[in-house]
Image (cartoon, rainbow, N blue to C red):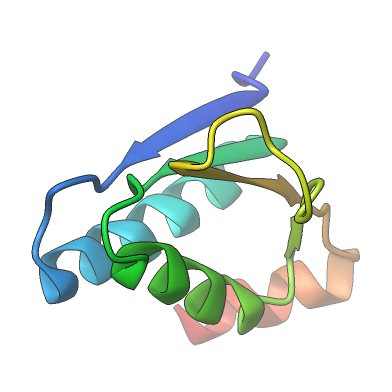
Length: 95
């Protein structure tokens, strides 16, 4: 049985390094069948926070959980949506 929640820790990373890790870890979590992802980006100047929201907005199988309230402002939660079988096939073909 797959782990239902995964953390992606990008706090204190440089922008490009954090972006690359974020995208790679999201894809791995998706393929592993993870249902929730918590991205720990820290607060700071909101640079990583904003990058996480922008990148995740482009990923059709991610949905923000409680985008307006989260007890930790240094992290953002996402639900990983299960794709339709034809969508999964198309995704795997592109990879």
